[in-house]
Image (cartoon, rainbow, N blue to C red):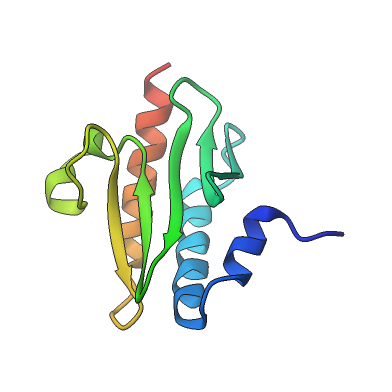
Amino acid sequence: MAESRFERYFAELEEAERGVALKIRDAVRDAVGDNPRISETTKWNYPAWVHEGKNGNMCSIMGANGYVRLQFFRGAELPEAETRLEGTGKGMRHLKVWCDREFPTGKIRELVSDAVVLHGSGE
């Protein structure tokens, strides 16, 4: 079976960023669980999770130099976004996960769980 675009993204990252991105992917998958309304896809060439409801784009992963961003499309609407996430745009916020720092598994799971609730409540 051919590798999906979603999985190919991780394979194409530099080694340090790949390790972090795969940990983020796994933490997002754990937080999403078996929710049938959320699917993995590729948006704008990046791995993303999409809720089937209105404003479905939930979050995505984007590798950078020395860190990986976990982006939340409606991040500004998440609880305590101003202290938990970076960004100043109308809606998008992100968490930078640095390759040389402790991995924030709990924080990622909490943010994704909050995003799942946010996306599921606005329908």
